Image (cartoon, rainbow over the protein chains, first blue to last red):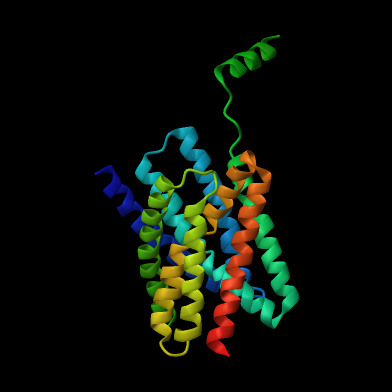
Length: 138
Length: 121
């Protein structure tokens, strides 16, 4: 039952993410032969998935919600296949733009995901709060 | 066509995302290594499918291409999980994380290039 709920959440999330990808891609478009739309989508999606995973751990979000937002929305929003096929086309038609697209995506993607996990300030443990209170009272 | 593109992408992505979730879970159960084989295989297979659809469907059937390409392949493959898995892998083994990124990107490009050469020329 829990598994069916998660699959339903991924289905709905995947639809929302895919639709959002089309809207953002159309809005951003491409600059010369650099696929700026997919570039922006993949980096923002990597950041947001890092953030979602961190929120899921911190606030013990329900499994179906995590599945719907993570593999669902962010998985549907970001795309590896369009990146790879688009990168090959850019490499073929405008090699330098293609090289920049590949290198920047490969390096900044994981970096954005890492930044996403760091975006929420670390919650203070009870001891730290107590120490902070003590500092103020001194 | 623009409205059609939005809905075809939305529908295709929903199916692609569910299939990715199921395949990913299955490979995750079988995989006993820290290497994210699930996403790796999903992204390579999805890239192969998109390259084939791009070579054979773009002009022949634009609507079916959007449904299967931007829709299904776009939703099936994922860059966000690829990125978070790289960060997680980096904490276990930096060389393995670099190998994950390099092999995904280079093989993905090679698949797109080979399909393009074989089917377009």
